[in-house]
Length: 213
Image 1 (spheres, rainbow, N blue to C red):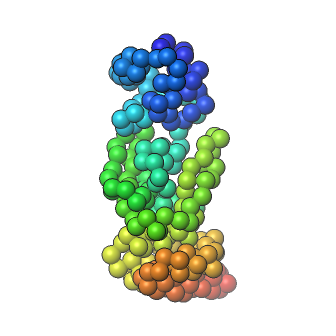
Image 2 (image 1 turned 180 degrees about the vertical axis):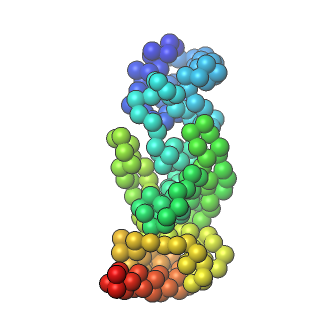
Image 3 (image 1 turned 120 degrees about the vertical axis):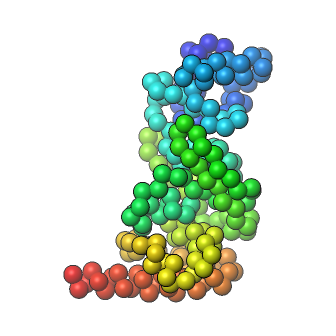
């Protein structure tokens, strides 16, 4: 396979898997050798075994971290601090992209960033959606309400008011408190139900502060 042929096949894919190149009469071992050569030459990034992205200047658009996160671990969705920062609910920039999965936890450090995967029970894999993240790219991302609950679920004493204050939550008017409550009720976890009550108090306090200002 020539590099021009690779570009023709993957030009619209910010991240692609080896399987995309194996249609028709091709030699899998030959394809793998070519991929290794192109990675060594700086034309491709290998993100993990069997998962690649074009390197500049060949990429049509830079892969969004959320798209990469989805592709590195299938069946995961982006959540926790990454989503809270994305929606402006916490002030910190989060260079590490965090996702949740029913599979094994772990972390992948790649040329395009670092990606952490945290384990949650399979019955808690809800409250996410396919969203546009820019440059015609889409990724499975938790609703902000579910991202907050995922973080609380995964954090020891996450329902403690002191912990919630430490998060420095902001712009709480962007949260749908009814949906937050419904997600917590669906989980069946008392911890998350307790947290919702504290978050309501924080939201009311923030609203009152803006009224005073």
